[in-house]
Image (cartoon, rainbow, N blue to C red):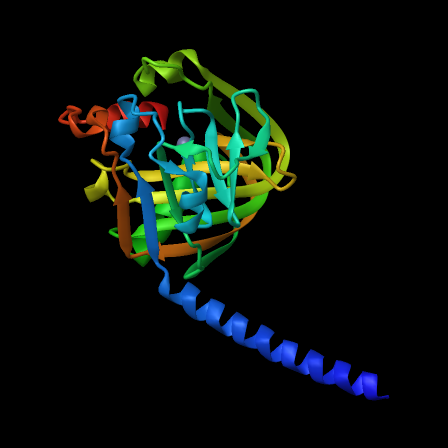
Length: 266
Ligand SMILES: [Zn+2]
């Protein structure tokens, strides 16, 4: 009997801890509408593929996002605090904390709005629906979406790891891009939107990376047919950016307008 009483008191105390931990967690989540970007997409396009932050440190800045790895080694998908690599051979693996990152965008995801029961017959159908949502919520915000659903078709790409001297990314996409077409997949798309006025730091519009629920397929999304999905929308109002201190970046000529080159490969 006495043991039972002690157990009951212990469980009661543990429940109090659990409740307060959940409350503290929610309070923190509500505050975090910041996004963290590593480098600029324009520097990456020019061949700046050396990592400037580790996967371990990137994870301290966000649990959801997208990017790539040192040497443009595949596509990065960050989901629920895990950093996945979609390799050019089509496989998926979790990346270790010591791996380096030349370009990425991450946030601690918290849902500020939702889009339920959406479908899209192709990529541009989806992005035009997302554009409408962004227009409604404010076209000058940054957005991170988690779109979880079923895909009758999804086409993704990844790229082969590059060796120095690095080529511009438009060349990499021509020679070292691998495209995979999958049918009947369930999974999550991490979608990131940057407004027009930020197009010299990233790309205007929607950048989509996919990971299947069974964590075996994924990559940078090129095309899709989404039969049914729900999307959580994180409205971002704070932008943080980490820049390389290497001469290859600090002395790089970034005067070229990269918008059309970026839209040809991203
Ligand atoms: Zn991408």
